[in-house]
Length: 398
Image (tube, rainbow, N blue to C red):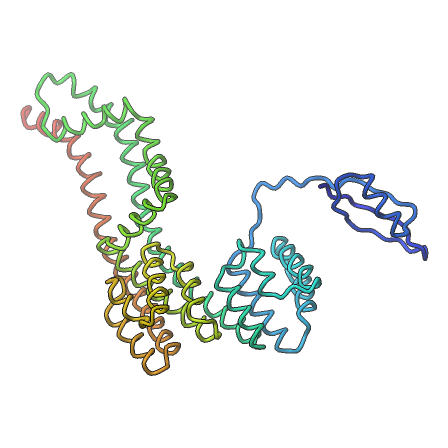
């Protein structure tokens, strides 16, 4: 299929222009003639070379949902809401997405069903909530709930990511600096020490031996981090490897605690939002499992679905899994017994989102001295190892 730009005159003599997506120019010409156009001029639209493809981000969707909620609340028809949003958008990718959704709506497809046709932009949770809002006639309210959920979810992700960037950046820089010292600096000292004719101190000899390995296999050293990342990604793509890596992350001393609390907060926030929208509990659990972000937790949530179909409570399988804290399972059990599960889940989510912030701050504060100590041992150790022979030589001369 190719895109053709055309200009022509209508039966009333007015000038018209537009675009057609058809297999070739002849079919495009015949199509326009059948519509009664004259003086037709057609040319193929040049292909745009896109180096960095613009994407619709989660933040864009959240802002759009808030705008859509406001427009629906004022009584505007849904199609007109999308037309106004298209005109007001300054991002090409979002404008194109809104136009595609509007075309589906004009053909009579419900909004929730339409959103499911764009899985890269709209997750299962958003689609399920929008469908529930359409069925209940409270689409504007549901869209606001989606916005609040997405904003809290993005804030939680941002907090965890920001805590991980600092140590990764420091360790990356330390690896680069150590590699430069080993490959370029220490060999210079090695040549100088070879003329001493005396036995070198043990730390110096170890540093020089490691440097020899770096120089001889520099390509392995430099490619090592990339091979490691690629290997982890390859393992993560297999079901067994995905499960084992997710389990390992949850069991890590400091990071595991942050990830576990973040997963609990996400579970409770998602489940609370779906329950408040009136989505059936079994369907909600499917959606919550898909958005869990961890295969281990996903399997626990799906086991809850099996337990509920067998007449058990939601709290029982959660408590058995040992993944969710006792406080969480007890509060969920109380919510089930009192019929206030939605409110209880919301309170748990609020509590654990605050806990994540405290845990992230504590992790960052703990990592800073550990990283400084690590850098001091590595870089300082290399410097001392290289200067030990010089100190010894100075003491002998003295």
